Length: 337
Image 1: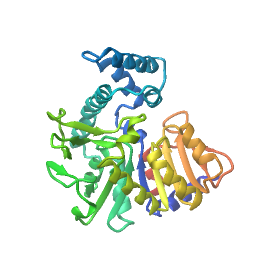
Image 2: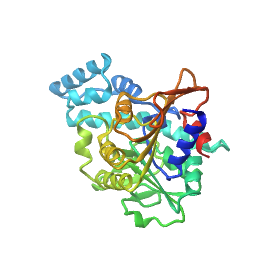
Image 3: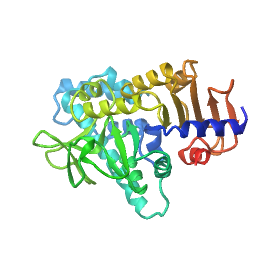
């Protein structure tokens, strides 16, 4: 496949105004910790002081799995932690990621440059009427920051303000809206002492009496998502995926069942177009895209250096290696903008 062809294919899929799907790789580009760093942090920081001996034993088994090299999600599937320890995992996850997220925001205030995601959002608003949809498994607020850099309002399932309440999409009215559907929760979502879920902006610590509403990997995440606001957000994400014919996945590993099912339906059965840009294709991404079932795909991963890309396409018989960065979001934008 010639260079001209993959340019054309990328632009063809982009011109369909793709729904954006952000995975952990999109956050890693900003220095936010991934699952392996989170596992190391949990081992070092979670204490079993005051925990009953039987519960402490389950934590010891969980830690042993992590130390042996078992990934975090697999370990949480294998050892079902008691409620007190599961809550500590959530708190530790928030404590690790929130300062990193806040630093991304603070650093952005000192720079005239906008995030590549903001450039993408601005580009899509030139081709679509008034809304851009983003579905993400990430807890951070990078998508929200990018929307504001692009001069657009964002909707995450809550009203606007300092103490935000759950609200339907019709509660936010603006000329341009970015719908950010965070299927695993957000660093600024908390269960309040009153029992409702509220959005609290830029907290430096977990407010007294509040519990972070983020769903960590493992069995418990499927139970947690039966409750609000996760249930409504997942339904909205399903609808957004169902109503689109093109998908742009950024750093998404295809490891999440909350998103996977509808993507399979649209791309396998309905011939939807999918573009994936990432540091490295995950095993599940390879299986999903390269199995022969997907009719319209373009996948780009990093080669041996930042300035090399390996391109897989439904329009080519074999991968193509090129000496340019198309695997990062900024590199991808050079193909379509």
